[in-house]
Length: 306
Image (cartoon, rainbow, N blue to C red; front, top):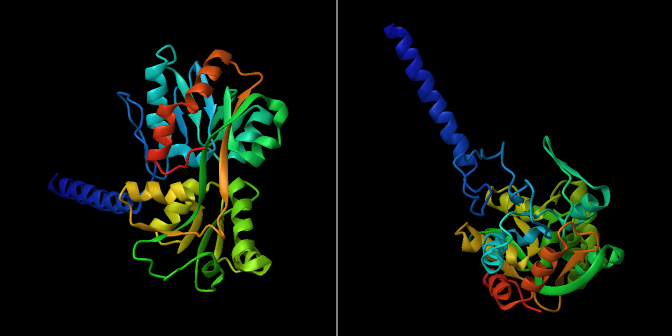
């Protein structure tokens, strides 16, 4: 019995050590937002963790598909909307890349892991170019926020990066949004051309992809910060608000600003779907997005206002 107890204690100690090491490996993992209240909370970093689905998936009264990098505003934005419109308490939101959301709308469903979602959005938000690809979807569109590019690096900027041109350096590992999945990827490519001509763009997007020193992300608002925080990449061109928010969290990152001569400005446009399942809620949310309360929330998180 004594031997069995000793073995049991040893096993528990080893498990604790391995779990502690595992937990340390995931110390920066999302969700970075505050989860909804529930008596059962079961989020396991790296295994069961769905940070870009928010709220009530059962019988929602409003469904909003947000361009992904707005995830940081969701908690306060939806709380303020519910307070102003208490008739809508069951709200579901997604903050996936806008290209993926567009495919979800077009195809009618999305599968994440083993979960299939068939909810139709009432409101879809994305960049101007994405919205303009499907004008037939919307009964109404409006600009409600703006953004610009910046570069995220590790605290202390150990690679001494100065700007976009440095992303072409052979010694620099770059986390770059894949233009096939994310609209920001194409905008960053435009900035590369402004900063260093087509040669810089080709170097980062072809030569460095080939030698694996450029890593193409599928969901940059999650992958890029994680790659910087875990020293998998040295620099990540992202929206300004991405670095702003990571610094708000106290994570060890720094921002390299991109000058106006090389930068790209983006407009966020909300579109009310013609076939919105909850048209009245959609209208109320569209009006709310351009109001003073929503403006203040977006400004708090580093977005520019229209």
